[in-house]
Image 1 (cartoon, rainbow, N blue to C red):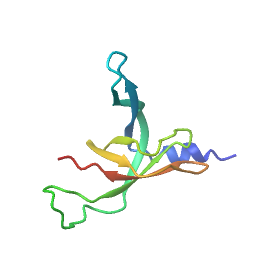
Image 2 (image 1 turned 120 degrees about the horizontal axis):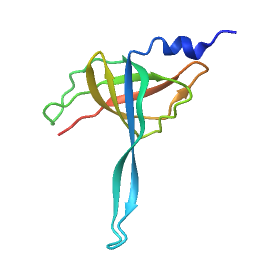
Image 3 (image 1 turned 180 degrees about the vertical axis):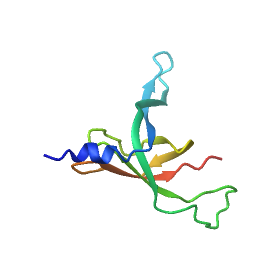
Image 4 (image 1 turned 90 degrees about the vertical axis):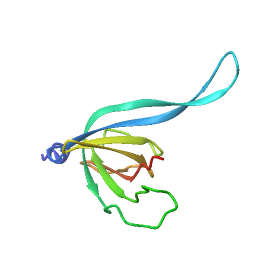
Amino acid sequence: MRDISSEAASLYEGTFTAYEFISVTDETTGIVTSVKTEYITDEPCRISYESINENKQSPFPGYKSQKAKLFCSPSVEVKAGSEVVVTQNGISEEFVSSGAAAVYVGHSEVILNIKNVG
């Protein structure tokens, strides 16, 4: 029997780390803050760009509009709303997850939007 997951994994050229935000309450003050927490570390992946930095008019200098598709193992759960850092071909980029993963027999796909800083 063919191992589709292994065949898909042979195409992975990079790794990714995923972060979620968890609400934490300070016991002394009662103030609730969001803490960025890593929940997936250096997981093998591949990224494919759906759009290359489209030039759109924006009031924000340096604004980028770019979508990418993350491919990874179907056993890895990338939660909707996660921040994801992908390193592929020696370049690291920060993305935000725009939705839930589409899970298939051999892989998962997650649509990501580039994280704009500033």
